[in-house]
Image (cartoon, rainbow, N blue to C red):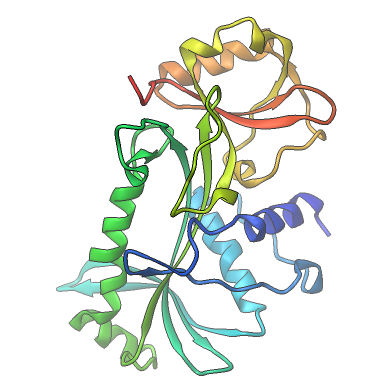
Length: 276
């Protein structure tokens, strides 16, 4: 079995939901996948974008579930031959026969720590290209409404799926990153277990403290992994040029920061300070 591949499946499984139960009408889908060792998960396609790779992982876990049957996935909804969107998954609960329209979301958000704004406004992408509020609005007003639209119902019937009685749910997983120098933030009503690391501005990264540590820049898919020691570590000075290039391109790198043999952290270096 490919250990890296297995680790990625396990990391996806271990990523907690951003909230439990319901948040502003978005019902969280919670299920416990079978142990991946029981079915030897297939290799994750390398050429897909991160979002599609994570959807592939989730699909495999669902296919080998004892609780849910996958009736369809990535189902396009078209109106006048123009695609309006895709339904991620249509599931049936094997035990109670409930039908579910499920949308998957896996997000990396920094928490700005700006006490003058509501917490849900503080969750933003490290490159300032997306926010939690934008995603929430898209889920409520577009993605989850597809199955209830005229075109959505017609498409479901074509796939042999009864569109009546579908329950809309989301599997919304997230890793959150709090300010490096102000880590302790109360995330209520969100899940405190989602805190995975910290963030720092590029200006603050140019300081004496960070010259003491070792670094690794993980690939995009490795972002979901917990940091570990089995990588080729680099010094602050040898990695600084790579970080500088990314910052100039307005691309915030995620680093694994090794402080000691037993202390390894995740940290985003931001090209723009979100609180300034």
